[in-house]
Length: 289
Image (cartoon, rainbow, N blue to C red; front, side):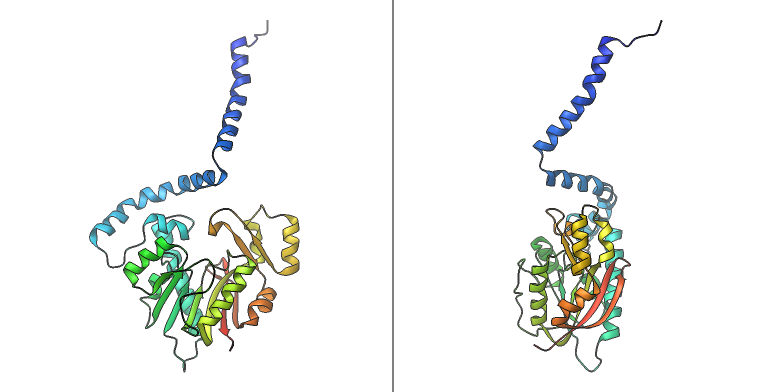
């Protein structure tokens, strides 16, 4: 005779899956989606926090002259809070920026005043301050990061609003860097900040910037076919991604850059995937107003 499952086991199997689904659905309705995303990021970052806890504490207790920012600030500018990632990416970005600068600077002109636009907690700045005779300033909307930087690098690092203007006079800088900033701004904000960067750069001053190539649209599988068609037609697409600045994505084609950024700046060089093999790198020269 074929054995039949007991009534108890049958009921248990019937109830177990629906109950789990109900509880999961209830939890998702109870907890906002941004909180789920935050929790997922924190869980993913936990191994790095634990691994770096010892070095972070030793560095803080030793009174290091140039310590790394705390993990919570490193996490805001990187994929993780990893000390290794922070230093490796910062060093590579700095080498790329300085190499581009050396290739396009005019030897007969002064290039002593630099601005790190969107400096975060200093992933790039920590390498720029120790690599040549330059007066480095930095701005960012992250006030906690700016407070940390100002205590270590001086009052040249200031918090700014999400919209222009910057607290500097016209033609105040010779070089401005905008790394991983325009990769996350919508078009109106991009145009407004380009206008402001043009204002604070002296004529023929250099803007070194990074953007996302249109080919990187694959990094956002949530983008619709309609949006992809718009990107193909216009050469630009802004794709909101969540509540964090870094979750938003902006994609630029070279013709779009030449057509829009070229109103204020003359393109000196364009390197597809020229920044760490991921973002496009451009060097621009400010046109006279």
